[in-house]
Image (tube, rainbow over all chains, first blue to last red; front, side, top):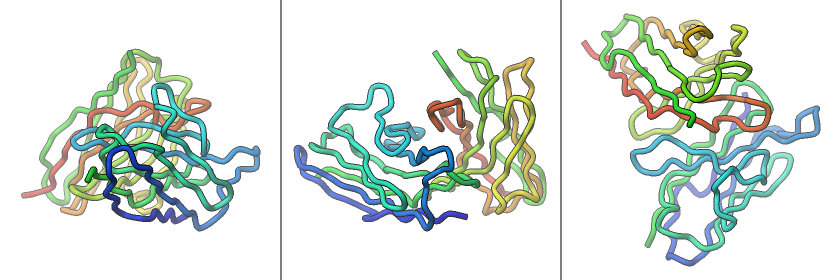
Length: 112
Length: 118
């Protein structure tokens, strides 16, 4: 089973400032089909998780362009260029290259 | 619009079986994969397993011996059965659309809290 390790586990950010979350996998997430199935989700307080980023760097419908994903192989990053109040919640990375599907521990983002 | 709704008992006794149904509306259950995911109170997300509309399944090895996921395409539903539950199975259980060709977990239910207690 792949282990997904997120850092930091919590983040306190001033509105308008950037934020960055790292996600490292214990094995390469490059699939034999050439794609990398690394996803990012945001779980706002009291809500179900929602998809933000698919296949490392593609934004899901409705996700603002101040949120971006990057990385390859085993190292991935989610960046928020200017944090807003609506960005508060827990961010999870998840890999779907291998089975079982595995989530990171989550990174809690709060506003200062 | 696409909606997923979990339904089932909110309280299950230890050693008994947890059963939940996910009703999908706004999209056909085929030809996608559909998953169950759970989240213990205050903790992270754990994938339980998925089912393809044909009935093919894959389960998390950590739960495999106790889990069964089934599908009823005529009702656009899929279901979860977890046997021999303990307090450690207390969690919010989510159903979600798994892989549909591009995205994974693009649609989620609102979640169902299941408490295991006598």
